[in-house]
Length: 576
Picture 1 (cartoon, rainbow, N blue to C red):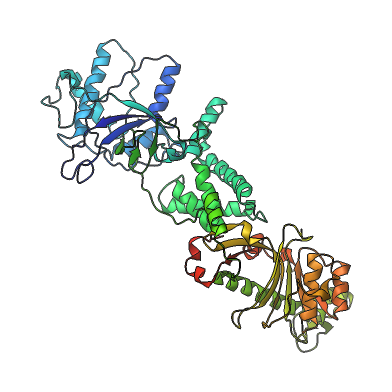
Picture 2 (picture 1 turned 90 degrees about the vertical axis):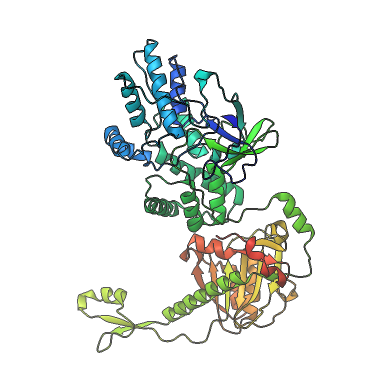
């Protein structure tokens, strides 16, 4: 909730707002559980302690920017040392300014409360105002009354019966609470939960960030359903270390939302960064739906229930908040996806060139590893005489330890070449899930001929002419050449599964004797039988040799509805 006071746009040159003076302006008091003044009032109400408001009313509040230290330092630095370092840099109010009038007004009203018989008064105010309120208060005690005179422009003199408009109370839409609350809405909710459970919250400013991260990962897994959960604990540790470094570079002790989202984007991609940002603004103590009578807050302005938009100024503001942009590609709403799906031309499709480069690079890396394994199979050992050859053979040397002889190994060059590489990412493959089976042919000599089975791209259209799919399995032929469609060729009808048909097609069309196979486990006897039937030999490379993130990035690919879509497809394809 927030209390707002409407004030007329009294713009002056270089002061208080817009250049044209158009539209209303508002100053507001956020009812924020993490705001010190609100927390003090809440405690006083619970303890039935009398409360008095000593700040003066103003027609047009003029906030002054302040640079305050991170309050997390209070966990390691004493309050006295923290206050001493802060108060030495507290600026003196400018003569005749609104701040000076507020300081004098608070001192006068404190003396009035003392005169009414209150012996102990807890005064809650901005730390940078305290030394000047105290000075004005002591001057009043010594008889040197502060300079009277007329109130500055924009200050309502309540003693003369001049009152500003009555404040109005509004609820703020839950989706815009980030612009009103001092902490992230998710962290604020954690403080409220700890308060309900009567638990301590001393370290919640840091532990809350960790809880936010875990909640965001759970939501990311639920919403995006990645094939592999590659946001592992090790990656989260890297994320936290990166956040720490970015925070220290910004001369802060606790991270802000920009730092968290930036680190999430660079560590785990756009999708995880978006989920983290959405999770950070969740506040379960307020309803999500924007009902009537709610304010939509923004950066320095708000939209009120009557449709009016006005500038807003926080009466309880602390350090100046700096809003910085970050480029993220959000997911499209479902109705837009339906529109794009209806406009899809089923007679044309092509790939996304950056992903072609990525998969071809990975394919080349796998071919090189398979060639190295071929050489390992042909290696032989002999006793060391004059040359170390291809390195020391540790196994044979240890086996002959009692003789004291050293053995070296010689790896002859692999005979032949490697033309076909088979990737099986999900075994056993579900035919219902991987219902799209097709052939793609190379556009130039640097690409491979591709045969694959994947998830239907029509079910996941993410942009106009842009769809997303996931490989279940594929084989690549390089150098590229034209071959018959493996999925329609009756010569492979003996295959019972998608994997067997893919391996049968790869072995049949390979001109070399060796075919590389990348899959999670060792190939079963039926696959080797198919290879022998085609007089081929399978060289197995475990899929676990590659990181989960690499596999996830390779498996996810995009289908474009024509080459002209390549000019704008990057606007809808999220980085992973």
